[in-house]
Every structure is written in structure tokens, then in C-alpha cells.
Length: 89
Image (cartoon, rainbow, N blue to C red; front, side, top):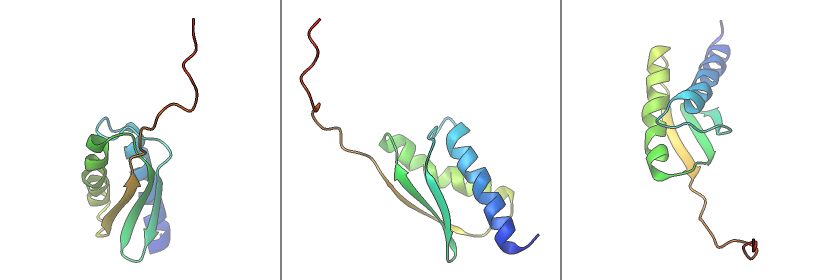
């Protein structure tokens, strides 16, 4: 297995961990390999989950003996006002 194939395989497991680990529980995060880092991008629902991203990713990387760093570039979307009036029942 080439190093690129190995890293791609590990990134799949990082994405799976983000979806299935209760500390994060987020689908659809973008997980890529740039230089010597795993970069995580996308919207995440709250600060507690955001804080868990790097430790969860690190655990997966350690399981596969992958010495890459982890960079979190996720954002918590601002909870804005509703874009319409509430429906009257």
C-alpha cells in the first residue's frame, strides 16, 4: 500500500469516527490531507463537538500509526433570526 493510499484509507476512518463517535456526531465534514496535516472543514453544530474534533481525529490517526498533525478549520454557524414570521396555528 502506498503512503497516499494509506493516508486516504485513514481519512475515511477519521470521517467515520466524526459521524459515529458520540463526542462529535457530525456528518458531512470535509477531511483532507494537506502537506503534513489532516485538515477538517465544514459547519459543526456546537463548541463541545468542535472541541472534540482534534482528539477524535488524533485517536484514529494513532490507531493507524499515522504521524500527521490535525488542523481544525470548522465553523459554528451563527444562529440568526428566523427568515420568516412564525406560523400562526
